[in-house]
Length: 195
Ligand code: 5GP
Image (cartoon, rainbow, N blue to C red):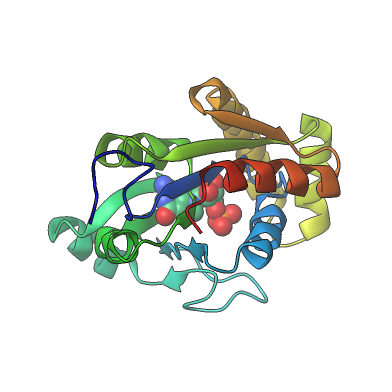
């Protein structure tokens, strides 16, 4: 197999999508995953509890903190981070298995994880989803109705920190209109997607 350049290689590519929570990232990711059926989604592991409607092995692999820490010791994570007091991580074996099968992978991870992935996979395409405003972000978090007031306040503070990192990303997509944001994200994927 020709591995001279990323474009001629048959190995897959990583697309990293980051956004402050409430920016509509999950909806956007689900929309493009439907449009690009051969794009595979990296299901993260987390120690946080499932939200209503979330399923183990679909949205996340929900594991205990002990299991997570054991896997840190075993060095199985391609990246991991502590977000809002919970651990989140991406399995390196999962990424490598799919990449070597020529699959492109979509990762939904934070800036901390993005930096770690870029060290190991420098060809990754990074995309930052921006909410139209902090007010709209707060409204979306309130509408979701799954988080306490304290958690929402913490997520908004964290959103500001995350948004300050947006210029480290190769692409920025403003989610002011969902159909337009889906089109923009799809165009970015089409430009780099091997499929
Ligand atoms: P949530 O709990 O709302 O699903 O996710 C909280 C944050 O954790 C989001 O910013 C999301 O991108 C990030 N996240 C989810 N999975 C991972 C992961 O595997 N690694 C890292 N570094 N961040 C993750």
